[in-house]
Image (cartoon, rainbow, N blue to C red; front, side):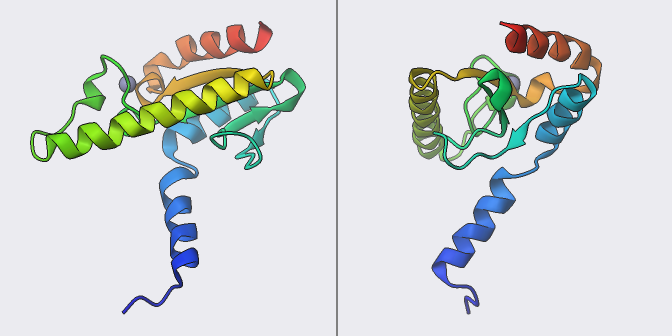
Length: 137
Ligand SMILES: [Zn+2]
């Protein structure tokens, strides 16, 4: 039996699914080391950006390559079984992400998307440069 209400359950699921994933923690730690101050998960902004830098009017999304359909990325390859289902699901995610980014830009925010596969330890220096360029723009 389901011991949670529908709302409670979806609240829990959204926490499990979207908050404090490892790549996100890596990016947060990096920003912190670089001396940037930020806020997390501003629910009043389109797409609830993972990291918000109000002073710079910039937001950062840290996206899973699979779920957000990272173009030309090995990690975003769809499974052979139920391919149509996954194609449909991922393409809806991509569409939603794009819509949110457009809305944010229209509101005057700068948007950077960082992908899972960019947060490997050996690539952190490169990532720091990408972030720094973005925030200085
Ligand atoms: Zn990727």
